[in-house]
Image (tube, one colour):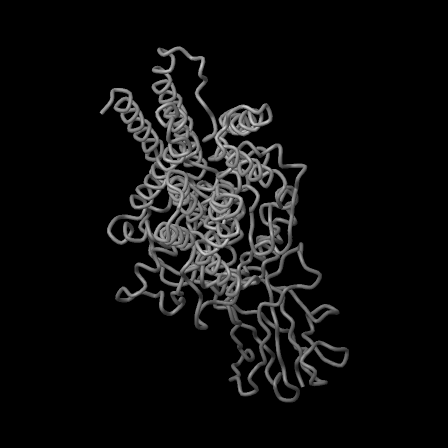
Length: 638
């Protein structure tokens, strides 16, 4: 082995150690969607365990796309604690990306591969991309696999049926990991193959490229056929937000505070611009590099101009940045005018840059973990859950700025899905998981044991600046959120404070774990009952409805939690007829008891209500464990 080759390999290994070390500085690196995928893989692994509650609530789907993360993490999680399995998975992802980028660079110019070795190390700068911190793990794994496919095509363009079959297999495998990345890679490969073909053979090259891409395209078509846009709960319309893009664009390339993202952007633009400028000057530029430059420019323009969201799919535009960065960085060249000594020192110099980059990444990971420390502090507490748990998110950003322009990871709410990690450690059932399409999501809900979906309006208010600035609005929002959690075994309030938690405890929640910004509580409620006057059921049919009362409402009409007809044969005691209130509410409640004279099942002018009710038939009472009875004053008598 040549000395230069040995030096480069040693430096690649050193950079690899630094990259992995940056991932292991904390036990868990918060990501936005990562908990969803961790729990999904955990459910798959333990679905058939003895005593598992999962078959009562879920069914496992025949997922055949978007499996990149579960294919790596799933086997590890079945043998190791999930946090260790996740760190190993992230380490493998990052290393595979960095080395895959190196192969792309070396394959781009096989004749001068030795001269491009310093450039090949730049993959370590983008091995922890924005998509990783967003928790788009399958996307990162799919993109990584695409690097090896691209390196294969660049190194040895498919010229035989066997090589085209291998290319088709690689694209299909990438599609199984993440179908959109396979389409991107397939498009890049198709352009290269068709452009390289002689003028008279290009139509045949198009046909061969189409055949090689057909399995991945077919996989994409199946995912669209099976996609349930309502269930996927993604953005329902295209959204561009071009004006705000410049303020966050650099962190789509490299997240975190500082100049790292701008440096990578500058290198990407520099690689594309210098290549195209040399073409314009009619300098000798290999045809493959010219095509890669135009492809990289197209991807960069998509990053700049594509919509942020499209129907049923959020955050599309930033995903083009990763492949644009790969192609732009790969086109950089070592200046020919450097002295031999400077060229020799370039590989160690780039290695030092990579290690400094790792220190910045390690700081970002510590900052993210510290910011989410309160939200994750209960993971090691001796908790045990069995039934469905409802997340209540008052601040999902772990104290980081919610504005995209100021966040170290734009668009990321690192605590929004943190409750799902507790279900991995402590059991229990998630009220919400990604389940928009059976082809790309592994788990779906089943049966009727899951409580109905909670009213989304209160959660949409929670965490907004209106909610933070208006105490009356916040009280109304918290009251509605407390009502949402009543049908569930318990709740997990993230990003709150002592005053917020007091609202929930007054409403019948018993804390299981609590710190400065996190409340985990089970719902017990109060043995609430409505007391009707004796003889109240002698004539008309009677029904009642109730809801939680607050001085400020976020809806035009008070929200009814139950509407129940009173059984005419309900037993009577000395003090009246006792009727339990479903849901066992606590605190201030409003009630409306209706003697349905007209039989309309709605409160109308001819109906009667309690004597202590207002014009709308409602009255307010306070329920507690010590005083559970609510009396309807004699309006229901004969």
